Length: 439
Image (cartoon, rainbow, N blue to C red; front, top):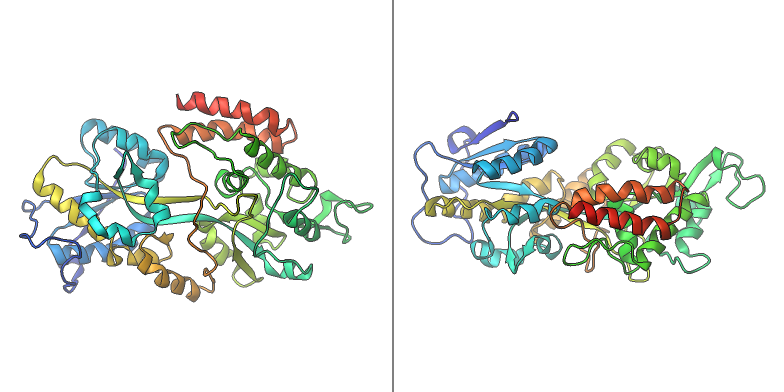
């Protein structure tokens, strides 16, 4: 059993004042657990655990229900989960991501929470909430969510009189706004650009766009923007469609045309594009809101950077969205189930999620916390107002073994960026390998 940090959050320990009744709770007698008993909640983030402390202490003060918060590191978290399912030792509430949701749901141990949270769900952003709808039920209370974004070195972009606010790409055209701006941004040590006489790609001083095989930040949004998908609704891997092949070949061609860092370098170092951006050498970085902390801390005012929508295709901009939710485990005990329900309602409310928003741990799932989240980032010198809730998105992995399937496909897709083959040959092969991995 991995080591667990136990955070006992109680009224006495935290000295919290009363915060009133929980919204959404019934007028029945307060839920009571046996003396010395507490609900168990498990997360994989120390930062989130620290943020939750005051929130859960307030929950205890309001309900009398204590919560032990367990923290397991990422690898230990997923290794321990199936063991606890088998032994019946799951916590009462646990964090979940979409890649592992189907397997957890199939185990039959989760609580369907639609009836528990009732109308409270209407206050949550639909993009992260819908990821936890299965079999006409709702199986998680979204806590935070992330989406892919485009960040621009505004100084480099302004120097070439460019505009990164609404970039588009068209694989069928000879050129497009993304390629044109990437070309203008790419300069070697002598000021020459790709296609000009004696241009030296090995001596590039600045690069254009982060065209590299990143599933979340680049591949997913570009494939979806062309009308393709990573998976069908039933979970079948589908990225080797005509649209998917065109999108991947387009990205690899950006690298081979020297408008992006070389494929051999980005395959060898998946963080290279971000590193170049932090160094002020990359004009356009497509990444995710999960990188905002690193960007803010590392750039620290050395140059001006801004946030924009992801590059759009024929179907518009399709940022990839994923979210973390709190799931309830069926205790087969009526009193304990009521207590779990109270905790889930709290975690779905403003006060339950406020510490996460104010500590900038992902985008808040509760709509009423958007302002607090933006204000918190503003105090850190980052304007996140351009990050809008998307109407149409690219989806993350869904279904049992879907993360394993993606991991199987990515080295094959990387061959296109290495110049060893083309997308028309590699993607069907990668798709078949991914489907076999999911079988």
